[in-house]
Length: 171
Image 1 (cartoon, rainbow, N blue to C red):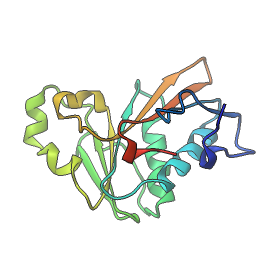
Image 2: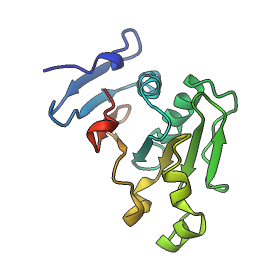
Image 3: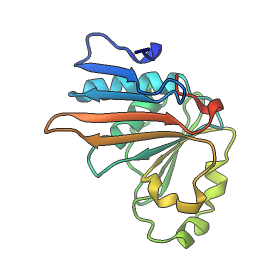
Image 4: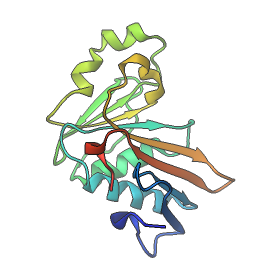
């Protein structure tokens, strides 16, 4: 099975990476440590460009904000990254600049219109990272990188990264 070269990080917990379907460039990773999750976030961040949108899916506490924090830090962001639940969006002056959205509090599609969601999702000057992306519904962009995080046992998480269009490939 081919591996994704940039995401193998020896010495950081147990990281198992395999491309499940190489045609779709789907990456699946099982990790037992927060350090391994952080290492994957760093490797993903290194491959992103302005204009790319990364949508995060998964239950509360699974590590979405942890990954985003590590991604912003690895891109040179100096601020402490926290979930922007009450502000909805945080801008980080990293290189390239990063916009972090948290849609947890949004209850209906009208809320997305009130924050002018398209202004964020189609910003070509920033990398856009969106937590609770399932709340985008019909506003989900046609091209993005999907990051799914799930608990896979008491101390294990399953991480799956799927580029939704060929130009957004994660590896």
